[in-house]
Image (tube, rainbow, N blue to C red):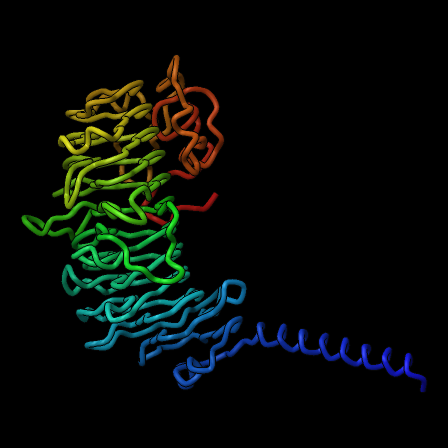
Length: 447
């Protein structure tokens, strides 16, 4: 064999070796471990980027500690029950949060049921002793029997957390449904996506995102302006809510950092159905908020309340909401420090004892609560038959500057996710027959 032939052979062998190595790496990405309640716990320590831990149906009694288990951006680690049929059930234990997360990233946890057994524990807890947890997806979890007290939480983060997705979960009767951040502002929740969840009958908040102190310097935490999106969820407090000093809104969002990274972050809260709260408002917030395309019904009090809590309302845009409330529909309370920011209330349909209390309001349609029946198809029926779509010829506007909505993620769509055509107040763009999802106390169907 001559010298050139030997070189060609060497190059060919190297190429084949490279292909085999790449193929073996690809195979490792697709590893699936099928486990049962008897052997799942041991398998956790073997998980590597790209792996899937498939939990078979049954009762799991040792919890799910996700500690220092890290995937990669293009090789997530997935822990899941079957897509169809019976789900794995994790039974709570005294003194232990059922799914415990600590220094974890690029992981997906889905298709599980968490039974709190009435113990004072959390369903999913990003532990306070963790340094961080990022790119965590919680999807299609059923969380029940976590209502021992108001501090028993369905899903909780107590360390710096960013790029979380909380999607399609059902949380029923918890002390608090979802609690993100820490009471002292020390555990920022950044750039999150909370969508298609059903949270009902909690003692305290359905959802609270805490205010934030200046953010710690942690590698990988977003430093540019970011948005936390809360969309297409059901937040209901028909039953079980605390009264007196412990009463809480369905949803409360706190302010962003007052200095450093994150000062211009904002919440976009849209396409949600807020239903009933006998003792508090349906929504309360401060900081930078865009609140649009939502449905609000509260037969016993207020709907939307923007007011100082741990800081002040800053950049506020409230538009395209349909609101029915026995008290105040929309109120914005500001102080001298808020004067440098814009708070706008426009293109809402509000039917309440006191429809709107705000310094800047324009192009809204307002009326008394009971008069909503003149404008909407079926506003005052049992919840399974509610239809807040405008009656034919109602809620139309002659003129509206919609350019202020273009900066927002879905500011050009309505509650049904349809492109807005024509000028209508409220969550829907159209009148007559509702072409989309009819609000009810069950999961909202994704568009």
